Amino acid sequence: MQITSRFTIAVHMITVIDYVDGKMPVTSRFLADSIGANPVIIRNVMGQLKEAGLILSSQGKSGIALARPVSEITFYDIYKAVDCVDGTGLFHFHENPSMDCPVGRNIHGAMDERLQDIQQTMEEEMKQISLADVVSDVRKANA
Image 1 (tube, one colour):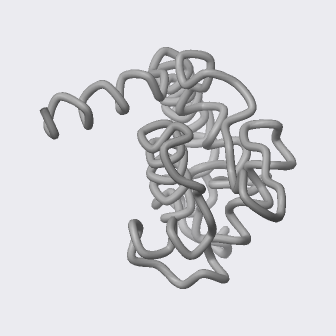
Image 2: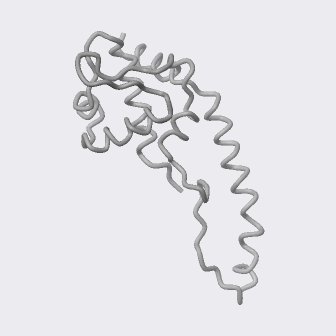
Image 3: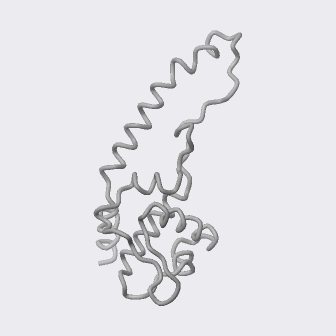
């Protein structure tokens, strides 16, 4: 089980955009330098955030901006925007348990609902955390 690094990259990006807040243009190169990631990855994540309506980007002086305040952007919004989890869910089950084994033939039935409940609980918690929380902590650390 692992949520891809696109999630933390996206949180970092949005935090930088808010932190800079018009003091200077935010570009993919600027973000790549801050995050320490390849600019191609940054542009891919930017595309996902833009498609989800979380950021605005334009060529030229204005650069990248937030589409809405950080207080209205949750971890869940970002998690969904950057496709952290595919359609099969957060947990990926091994594909071929033995049907000849009493555990193998029953392991899905014993675990599937529990794993889905765990994912749902995590997603509900993510809906309660806004990017304003992260931005606030970063600002305090730099004060």
